[in-house]
Amino acid sequence: MENINKPSTSIKNWAIDDRPREKLLTKGAAVLSDSELLAILINNGHREKSAVEIAKEILKLGGNNLNELGKLSLKELQKIKGIGEAKAITIAAALELGRRRHYSFALDKTVIKTSKDIAQYLRAAIKDFSYEVFAVLYLNKANKVNHFEIVSRGGLTGTVADPRIILKIALEYEATSIILCHNHPSGNLKPSKADEALTQKIKMAAAYLDILVMDHLIVSEEGFFSFSDDGLL
View 1: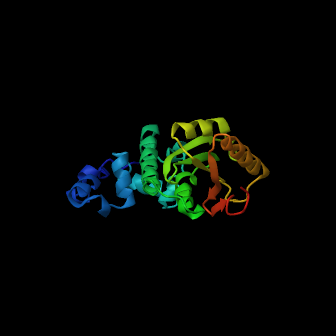
View 2 (view 1 turned 90 degrees about the vertical axis):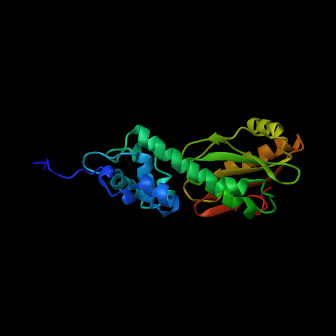
View 3 (view 1 turned 180 degrees about the vertical axis):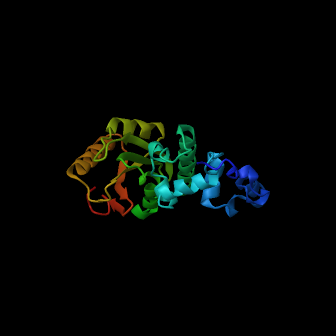
């Protein structure tokens, strides 16, 4: 039989210095643990567990690794008791903001000289997708990045990018060169024949508009592959 005299798990009953919101107000966000920060997003727990305890469950679901946590779907987050659709969306949105903050600094008018200059940014931007996405970096005459856009989203084994859409965006941003990129969720960095054919198709179409395809990068958690470095452009 349930003990009706069991103490409440509500954070409101904690000492003020131990409450995540109050701790953030008085000491700053940096001193909070990952679970405490998540608890603020969750806002409240349920009868059996506090928001912090639920947050610890969520972190465990991601192997106590924020990078892995960012890959979880809304349905996977909702496996935790106390996490409904609204809270799952809040958590996913916060993780996405963190990811964008991480790579937006690298994008800020970065001058592209080598494949390594952009590979780190692209890996951070698209490596976490569980399906293939095709993205393009649009550069100006000074080889500075003016725009980044995911132009196509595919399945687990491939995606198709339309050269017309890619070049339409290039004209809108007055790009003089572009860098193509897609991820391989499998981790395999070797380009397929379809990857090579698509690259040449986009390269030929871009040439008619005097737009240079500087490179095509394949990225995964294992690293990156550059068409340019490997002599495929």
